[in-house]
Length: 149
Image (cartoon, rainbow, N blue to C red; front, top):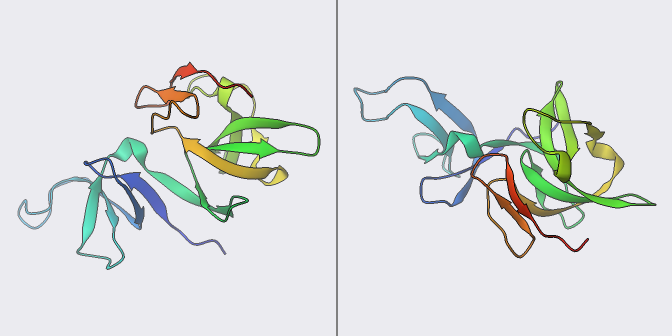
């Protein structure tokens, strides 16, 4: 059984990992505001408020370097005959991959099995990383792709 774990960016832009809590209303007479929170290593009541659009769940898989693969990661997928940059998504009840070139929440052309490739994390859809050639608009839309692959 895979470990249930989430990752999200706090309001300062730092990544946090832990359990996810989503409060739909203020709690404790307003001392805890509605929002998304990820617990730190100490657990409740110590938790980081995170930007909900950056929250992704751990797939239970590690890349070739032993790094945890989360929903929203961009992975370089390699098979015996080809390689491609893909985005990890949760669709149709399971974690899947979408070609980075096709990645758009409204018009995914094809899903690929996440278990069929050797994977290496090369970024994520929430960080702007000009060195990798990916730049996003803060959501899921690619603003620029200038990869030499």
